[in-house]
Image: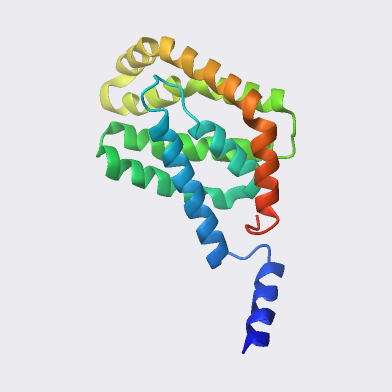
Length: 185
């Protein structure tokens, strides 16, 4: 029995392009989701200073496209915690977009590059969020909503830049060690 289980586990690990998630990957994705939610709640008292962007970027770079499972689960948990609102639709395209954009540069290892990337995302966050208002109130509403939030976007961009610059190497190193034990891209 044990020999068959070992054979099966080796077979799963060899299949790096498997569409199915194994138990270990589900556990890691659950921990990623919990980390995203915990980081969001821990810094929620600070306006537009958050670690969600930081973690989504690093998770995408380290673990690949399977992180989208954690991103959508995070959005679902946010809905349960905060209730439904227009922001849900924003989150359904903004966080996956960040993940997919980070995947395009995943081979880069420069903390400065990732800090600039994260900072730009923070600066454009309000503009990305305002897209939903094009369909609700038209271009004037979207533009007004975006302009009103620019001071917060500046805080968001600067804090994303600083957090990524400081935390990129230590957290990336830890995630690479975790990757050795678990998630295949």
